[in-house]
Image (cartoon, rainbow, N blue to C red; front, side):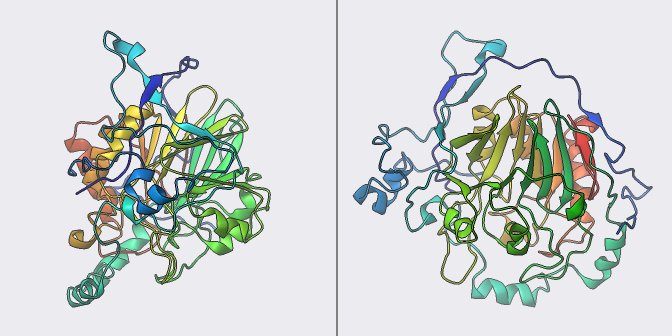
Length: 425
C-alpha cells in the first residue's frame, strides 16, 4: 500500500523540560472491570514503501508543478529544494543515547494565515479508492455487515460510562477527558482544547449515539481552541461548532479553513502535514494519517486529513490520531516527535476488514501503532459512541486488552477510560 506523504528532516531537539513523574489517575480514571472485563454503564444526566517518484508535497501534484504558489501566501518565499520521502533521518553519526532525540524540521506557520491550496488532495490517499463503492455496499447488505448483529446490541448497556467532574488542571498540568468517540477535552499549557468536537445526539447517516456525551456542554470551561482531524460528520459536527465563540482558535487540515470562515470564525489556521503553529505557548503539529475526506457528493478529498501532536512549553506531548488505518506513518511520527507522553488512538469501526482495513485500525493494529510511536501511554477512542460498522459494541475494548496483554505491555500504560473518564499526566 503506498504512503504518499513526505516525512520531515530532523534537527536537534530543544532543551528538555523538567523531569516528569509517572502519570496519576483522577477518581474518574480507568474503568473498573467486572468478571466479564467490562464496567456496567452508570446513568448521569504493514504498508508498502512510498513510491520513489514522490518527493516533496507539491512535486507529486500536477497543479502544484504548474502553479507553485498553491499552498503558500504571496509573501512566502519559494519552497525549499525537494526532499527525499525516506522519512526523518537519524541524528548525526556519533550522537547516541538521550542526546539522539530529534524533532521534525517542521515549518511553523502564522496563526490565522490565509492560504491557497490545490483543488484536490487525492494524491495523498493510501488506498486507490476511498470509501465504499456500489459493489461494496451491495456486499455489505448481503453479508449483513452494515451494523452489529441484533443479538450484540444488548451489550451496549455494558459499555463503560462514568461521567464525572473535570479534574483540576493548571497551566503546568496536562489532563484529558474522553467525551466519547474522538472528542476529548484536553487541558494543556493553560489552554482548553477540544478535539473533533461532536456533542450532538445524532449525526447524518448513522443511528443515534448509544452512550451519553461524557461531559455536558455547560460543564466545559471556556474553550480556547479546537483541533479537527478531517471533515467526516462523526469528527466535524456543525451544530457543535456553532456553539463555540467565533474567536475560538481553530486548527484544521489544509483545505478546510473556508468551512470555518463561512461560519464566522476569525482565528482559523490551516496546516499541511509536517507543519505547525504555536498558540499561547502550545504548539500544534499536523501529522499524516491513512484516511480520506468527504462531506458532500462533490467534495471528495478537497481537504486534507491527519492527526495532531500538541506540546506545552515543558515539552509534554499528546498525540491525537483522529481517524486512521495502520501504516508506516506511526513510526515516522514517533521519530519526528520523540517522547510522546500520551497517544489517543482509534480502536473501533473496523469491521468488515475487507472494507475498513485501509482507513480504520482494529485493536491489534492500534497496539502496533502505539509501539511504533514509542509513546508512554495510550488511551483508546473511536468506539462505544456511534454504531458505524459491523463489530459488536463491546468487542473493541476486549480485543484491545487481550492484544495489550499479549504484547507484554504494562497495564498502567493503558488508559482505557470510560466515557466521561479523565486522567492527569
